[in-house]
Amino acid sequence: CFPSLLYTCALMVIIFGTTFITVPLIHSHVTNEDAEFLTTFQLVKGVFGIIVMLVIWLCVVLRYKLAVKILNKMVDIDNEMSVLQDLYYLETSKRRISILFAANYILWIMIIVIELTTTEESWGIWIPLMLPDIIMNGYIMQYILILIMMENRFMSVNHSFIMISKSRIEAFLHSDIRPTDISERMILNNFIILKRAHSIFCEICRDISDYYAFPILPTIAFQCGAIIYNCYNLLVPVVVHNGGEHTLLQITKMICWVLMEILPILALSVCVTRVLNE
Image (tube, rainbow, N blue to C red; front, side):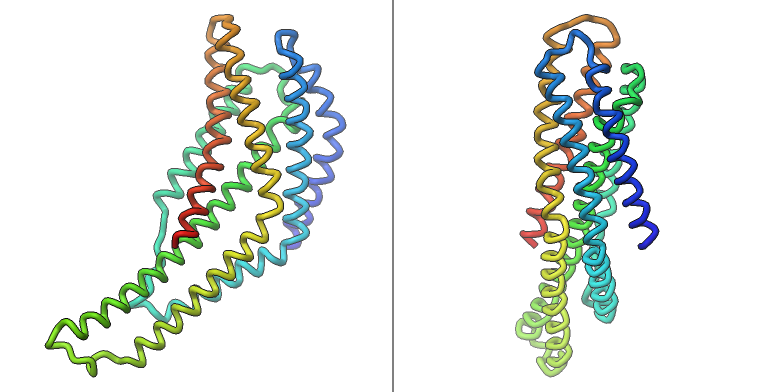
C-alpha cells in the first residue's frame, strides 16, 4: 500500500510540473480553421481536467485507510457467509463486467489509434487533453466494478431470504413434512446471520458512497462538459465538409469520444439504481 501511495504522489508532482509546459501548447496545436470558441473551450477543458485528475489522486492518497477498511469488511463478511454454503451462493456478473470493460477498452484503443493517425505532434498536448480523460474514465469504471460486486452480494442475501421463506411455507403446505422435521433453531440462526450480513453490506455501501462522493462530482461535471464539447466538435467536420479520408477519421474519432464519455455515466447510473433496488 505504501509504495502505491508514493507512486501516486510522484505522479501528482510530475503532472503538476509538466502542466505549465503542456497547457500552452494547446494554442500552438489548434489550426486556423478552428473557431475561437472551440479553442477556448479546449483550453478550459484541459485545465479543468488536470485539476479534477489531481483531486482524484489527492483523495486516493488521503483516504486510503477508508479504502482498506472497505476491502477488509468485504473479505471478513464473505468469510463469515461461507458457513451458509447450502443457503448462500455469491452471484457473479462476469459476462456483464466483461462486456462493459471490453467495450470501454475497444473505444479507447480506437481513439488512441485515430489520434496518432490524424494528429501530428499530438504528444505535446497528450497530458492536458487525454490523460485526464483516461484517469477519470478508469475512476468511474472502478466505481462501477465495486457497485456490481455489492449488487451481487445484496442479490445473494435476498435470494437466501427467499429460500428460507420457501422452506417455511413447505412445512405447512405438505402434509408429509412436519414442522418438527425442520430445525427452527437452524432457520433462526441462518436468518440472524443473513440479517447481520445485510446490515454490514449497507454499511459498506455507505462507506463506498463516502469514499467516492467528493471526487465523483467534479468527474461527472467534467464528463458532461466534455460530452457537450465533443458533440459540438463532431458537427464541425460535418458542416464544414472538406472531403477525404481525414474528415471521416475525424468524425469516427469524435463519435468514439462521445461514446466513451457517455458509456461510464450510463453504466454508473444503472448500477446505482440496481444496488438501491436490491
